[in-house]
Length: 386
Length: 126
Image (cartoon, helix red, strand yellow):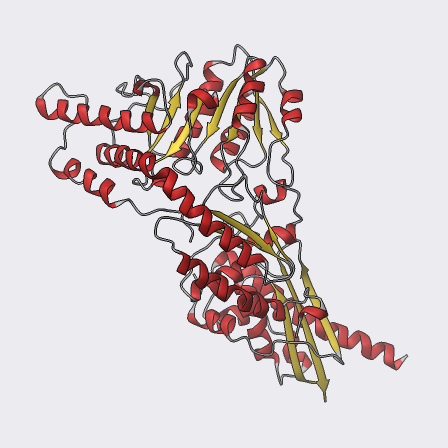
């Protein structure tokens, strides 16, 4: 139940990729037949991805090696290309590190950055955004929906505010794509990041939607592929798999998100109700259909993950002990949690292969896991220990 | 990531609990950091007669505190003071580098409990 860490490639997407590994191995830039076949398939995949987000034309989509590259290209590429118009970049305090770190990097190159605070649910406060949008602001980057706590940001309202101040909006839609309908036109987005693996396509591929008229400085210079914005021979099997996955995601989105919402809500209820000192992270309803994020007082996340792994359940946590940096999740801290509250967090991201039986299995096991760890903890109040 | 021995101590911790009338109590770490251990000892004839631990922390924190109580039980106070993080980590078959600080905490908690015992003894003498 840690689908946000990695998803299997859907069977139809995997099937679509195979011929492009051994048979249709042409380079889309070549003039001969083999090349042209690849070129055509590339453009079909581009159309499939464009349709998933209702992009005005397929040329607005460029393929990258994943969401991290797309975020880097959007933020650094836009900043470098437009720096004579302004050097101020606004983002939020709950972004993925592939947004945080490019923004931080830009501050070493003469740009200024603002990390907007969020409320206890993880919503960006619109009045703060308005206040921080000065005439030097060129770009605002806000996540569509946060993958740790599931909060879905008010993208339309954010877009209106950003555009009223003549700035541009980049949205990282990695976690949201495939779960909730994204329409770059009605949502008012100028740049949008999506990830292939997050919609059951192959890892190592992603896309950046770039609205017509927006100019970026490329990260990769070379043979000029992807309209000069992303040189390098295209990852054909990856792109084909991504395209197929996008087509399927669009078709199945409604039924799958309804199915996941039922699992999610039952799981949240059963993880909280039977266990005292348990809390929900994020908003109860304005959250991604697959996101279950909770916290338990007096115990620590990694030991919960180990206990779950022992019974065959994969999950995640915002505890410092589970991070490479040994820091607790900046997302949880941004919602106002204390360090020890972040350490006690537990996140499940549900996916295609999860069923109600899986939910029941985990929720039946959780009370004993928590009880055992609480019995060991010096922080547990006396009345909780039997 | 963890050795079988670490997982064994995590699943079946030794000496977990409190000693209400402990002769020495040592606490190290804090909940903000994500690791906190408390060790309780009962001392008789200068030996650790009984020892218990409580831990808030990750798998390595639980395993190292469990292991340090197992190593220390029955030893003289002087011997117990000499137990190092390396002793704890080695007895567990090793720890991932990023988790070595947990073994440090375990040894420190034990030493803190012994220091607390000595301090209490000095006060009794007064």
